[in-house]
Amino acid sequence: MELRMLQIIDDENLEDLDGKPEMISIELLLDYFVCEISYKNNFEFIQAVIRLFLKIHGETIRRHPKLQGKAKKLLEIQSDVWQKIDTMFQRTRCMVTFLSNSQF
Image (cartoon, rainbow, N blue to C red; front, side):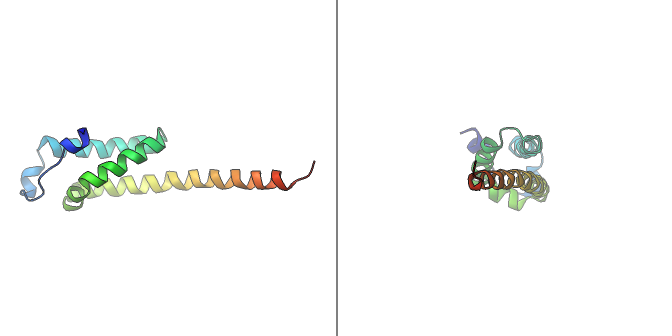
């Protein structure tokens, strides 16, 4: 519900939105997501919240260049962290396959 309360009417003038509390809150949330993902805290929870956040505010982010920059930074960090997690999964799969094929 809190995420939905930050909705901005997209038909408004872009210059008027920069100082609105909703816009500032959306910027701060994007910064929070970047911090949490870069610190690898609560990865699955943050992914679920980001999904909901983008579903609600995706159009607003798409229309505002300042928010687009923050979203791109989030995407870059998210991709980097996911690559590291995927590498760990691959190593684990390899070890499990090796151990399951070996005979004692």
